[in-house]
Length: 121
Length: 148
Image (cartoon, rainbow over all chains, first blue to last red; front, side, top):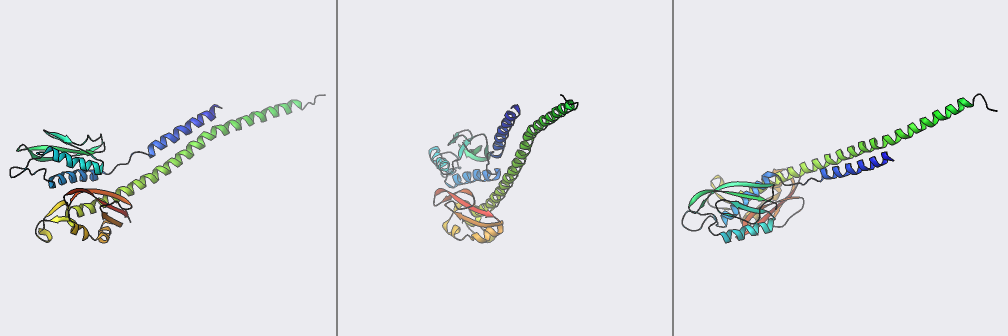
């Protein structure tokens, strides 16, 4: 009787462990995520978020317009986008598994490093 | 009257019963071993097929990524000035004429894909997307295909 009980317990354990191992979350490759982060930076540049006028290009000059664009990107892609610099912005904080890139942009007339992070919520 | 062989018969029966119990116990002990082995074999088979499927998916994704990089940066991007190697482009700014002039078959052939679809809607097979600017709107450009 004990042998049968032990066998059943072992089978249940094996099925659970194999199920957990096989169904590990599958993500995209990191190079693809890096390309997407670059796309976001590039698209924001093309949308004029670095060109406030004739003076030195300032990033995040018009925060509302930038937020509207990043919100739209989050809406169509489901990606969380956040900027970390002197000024903080973005749509939502990406989860632990995120991709980031560092770029230099003018903020209030001076060059500053901006960290762009993207990832699933 | 008791036969002189009765004692031997009784001893034989007892030995047989003991042997029977031993076989039965061995049988029960063998069941979990057989189950573990069969489960391990099944698991390794599933893990192997999962791993090969994942590898194939990643390889297709990389091929699609290299095609998308070319399309988004040059082939369908707005051209500034110049021709040939002296031409300068605006990566991620997609034009309708650039998109229409794409030769999907030759792109698929050069990337080692059996089929390729580039468009605003999602196609069939493995798909990736790139974020682009099209007619002043932020959109997703889909790249779908299958490896050879």
